[in-house]
Image (cartoon, rainbow, N blue to C red; front, side, top):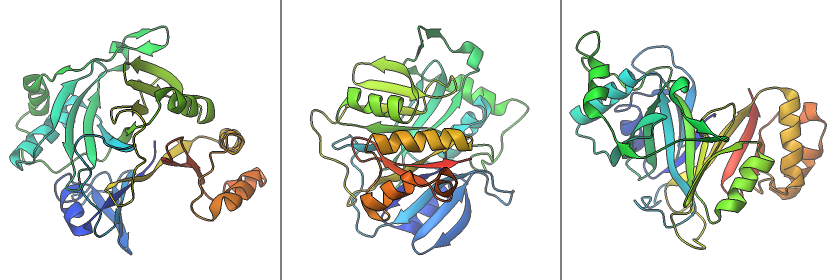
Length: 302
């Protein structure tokens, strides 16, 4: 999982949340766009996580899904103690949470940014504790053990003032609302190459490398919802990082064969031409693809 691009109405307001509260480091800012990485507070920044794009006048994203598009971006912290420190820091700042859950494979905090873009901050349980049956991982939604999470934060002494999410934080997964679950799962499985790891009524998860899920898909906006609108805060794109030239080339071939090249950035014809070019040439720029609901994924080699 690479970076995510989010639409916001006011860049300074968004930075007050992501930089000043969550503690992400500002890597660069230009032309109404700001790139944020894990680990602020003067330390060497970690991986780039979020790119904020200012779109003055965009409306706040609705609390409940009414269209396809972003449900939330999930930031994975290294440990349960880090999750506890985030919980204490957000509580000290009196920033409202939407909820907190125990999912068996992980424990999670849920909140919205100032534009209503959904966020999850979570910590995984050890992989040895995950329960699998015939290729599906057991996940649930139970109440978080707040006392246990806070106790983990305080192990070794008082956690003190929260300095934000740690440098080792990464984008763990993304969660989208889609119009048709089977069609979307087919794209993420057969075109992008993920494996289906979970299926519940109205929800499916896909992942790579034996993870519980890298992408969650829901149909909670109902039957035949409208597509996401650029006039509303949300996700412009997310980045899929693939390892190696051959894997990236094979993925480019599948995207082109599926007719899933994005029309943006030069048009469909330009995208097809890039996909048909020799693989060395294709490595010079991301492959821009769209899922069946026009949610954009940028494929890069890493």
